[in-house]
Amino acid sequence: MSDGEPRAAGVARILIDDEALRRRIAELARALDEEYQGDVPLLVGVLNGAVTFMTDLMRGMTIPLEIDFMAVSSYGAATQSSGVVRILKDLDQEIEGRRVVVVEDIVDSGLTLQYLLDVLERRNPRDIRVVALLKKEKPNAIEVNVDQIGFTIPDEFVIGYGLDYAGKYRNLPYVAVLDPCIYAAE
Image 1: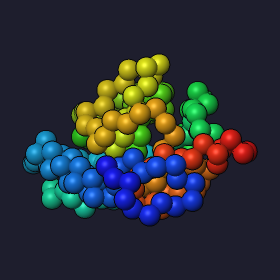
Image 2: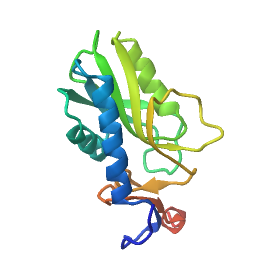
Image 3: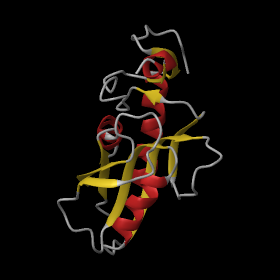
Image 4: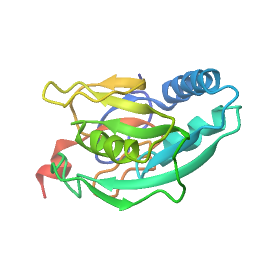
């Protein structure tokens, strides 16, 4: 984790640089290749934040796979979960009998992921695994099963590499802590 890269406005500090992201995602891709050898898993990306992570993850995999997307929301333009989860876009495919890998950008309170897993379990997949790029160290988070975690991070609001604040900063090539002055001013 480096702070040697140029920082965008609104970045308090870089938490995970692009090189560390590439290395860890390659490791996760190899692990998924091993686990799903002989199968064709369905990777379910959680929009919008997981798009960057999922793209790099699937490009690192060598086995046949399929993809689909869901969009759920519990944040809006806030920096903390609202506690209310909504499905904004559902899957386009049936998952009954399928091996499903939920690809998540960040596990924060655990509420959104638990809701999503409950919805997907009712559709009778063969199994569901969760791969998350980030998991916050959050003492009051609900316990939710995450099979593979890229990085465990402190309980700070992060942006970059697909993660946003009010729709901005997704394009940063690293994961950074958002400058608190950005949301304190709103």
